[in-house]
Amino acid sequence: MVWRFCTLYFVVQMGNLLRSAHVRKPNETMRLIITTFVGIVFGFFLGTSFPSVSLTKVNFPATFFPPIDLSYIEDKYSGLSTQALLNAWSTLKGRRGGNQLARRFNDTKIWVPTNPRGAERLPPAILASESDFYFHRLWGLPEEDLASKPKYLVTFTVGYEQKANIDACIRKFSENFTILLFHYDGRTSEWDEFDWSNRAIHVSARKQTKWWYAKRFLHPDIVAPYDYIFIWDEDLGVEHFDAEEYIELVRKHGLEISQPGLDPDRGLTWQMTKRRSDSEVHKITEEKPGWCSDPLLPPCAAFIEIMAPVFSRNAWHCVWHMIQNDLVHGWGLDFALRKCVDPAHEKIGVIDSQWVVHQTVPSLGNQGQAEDGKAPWEGVRERCKREWMVFQDRMANAEKAYYETLGIEYNNSFRWTE
Image 1 (tube, rainbow, N blue to C red):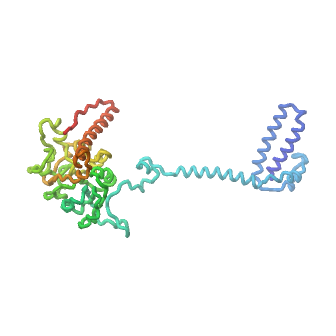
Image 2 (cartoon, one colour):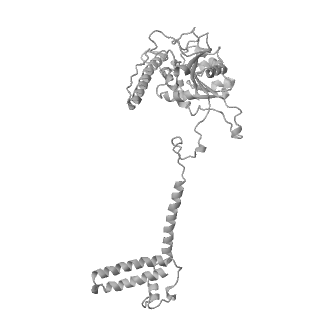
């Protein structure tokens, strides 16, 4: 190889220079050493540009190179594998090309910061951010699974002892409704005696409340296909109630959060939720003196109770985030629902012409535990009241912290105590 010849030539010359260095000046010797080194490097790169040849078969003018035994040099330094060095050089270039390929690959990796958290590496067109409770077959084409899609969702938190009442309730809801039963007593298979049970979804967790279930199974992205979500107790009499007509009135009056009116002949706590016989809907009422600091605030307006609430999709998206994981009874939510719609006194109301009877059956209360000589329901009641106070404190502290970040003085004197 030419490059090997050049290299070996300069090596020989280097030896001659070093042997005669003692007769030269130091600076002249250093200049010759540097020149020799540059020649070696130049020879290497020059040689790699030519095909492999035998130096013994190449004749160079004597004026260009002094007499050198080329065959001797080639034999002596044959241990330097030309092919190995060329392979090393090719590998080096290959690595450089590989790095460029990797860099190009990195440039084409997907990263979409506007995707949901954790899904930034996916192309947006493949994202399925929402789901539903629709049943699908195990066979056939997926697009042919659903003959129709229910537009509304109704949930009941139930125990088997209330099966007759739940059966009556569910028969008031058409096939436009997905039916979801939350079983707090763990008994699910017994409900198969009802013809509608096969089209219902059954979820079981012992001794849990409907708000515990709602927080964990009714995420807004799961119930997104439904226009309205009914989250009802198990002890409601529905003789005077029709679900489809109820929704028509909700839409007619622009309600985002609502409930059916309650039978005035049964025990009531609030005037707002009492059914009126002279109207379809009401949104404002008068309460006992001193109960309402503002006529447009709860419990005189912007208020419903939590035993039979109905939420629009948009309202539920807000309410779900307000439900606390550890406050399972939901006490206090009724006074805070107004924060999820605006203006609340116009978008929260009671449907009078579609009304129910609250039977006040303490079935879930009896799922409590007797302690210190108290009945199970008494411990549950105490927990409810305690959660109410805790929720109010959390809401007040959260609002205060928010306004302080804006430099606004916060003063909220609204606090309800029983």
